[in-house]
Image (tube, rainbow, N blue to C red):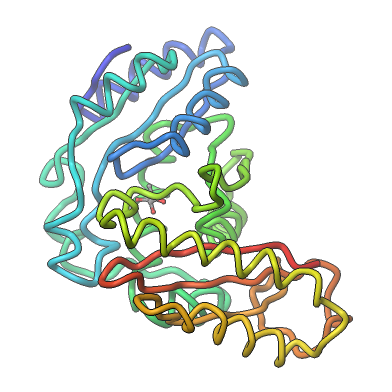
Length: 283
Ligand code: PAF
């Protein structure tokens, strides 16, 4: 495994490999790697000749300075874990070399076709501009054959799929199922910020969502929406920020169960000060 900081060095190493007809699998991350990331990394390793993982806490996707400053960082430990799963290149650039001043200071413009107006986009204005900015830049450097994204960040995955289409990237986007602990909690770097009690409390998010699936088609969308929020908020220490029941492709809220064949419930819950996201396929 090689740890690389320079985009031009990575580019030339990869173009050499590509000339030899090798496929390149790419996993973008912000580090603080957990088993969820490593599951995706293993997939990138097993499905491609060469695998690349980026570890970069992207400042342009944070709209909260404290969140950016406190985001866990440990590149050496991440690189060790990635080496163990057989990743070939870890790309960990420094902010000042990765971005020009202009890129850092101006919001990246992209036509989201409305996908940024709901859920995370509504509560974290500008977040997805930063995500598209960093992922498109990483794609131009790595030029992967396949790129891997977790379905936990459901809206991000939909936006990346649109980005690839709009920007004409010749890259296969692979959506990977949410990795959960045995008690159902979706793996997330933010779980490390939970106390033992909060960690236990947070299991109610997936428990309530899974329980709700049996009522799909039996009760109205609005009733299921309201009862899901109430069942989570009933637990002291949990507070739903939003719960949207949406079409899985357009992310538009649905009013009736027969509005779509692909329906997903997307939720964000504060567990104390820790913001956790999750989702469930309802239909
Ligand atoms: O999902 C993430 O960790 C980030 O949004 C990503 C895709 C690595 C871009 O910084």
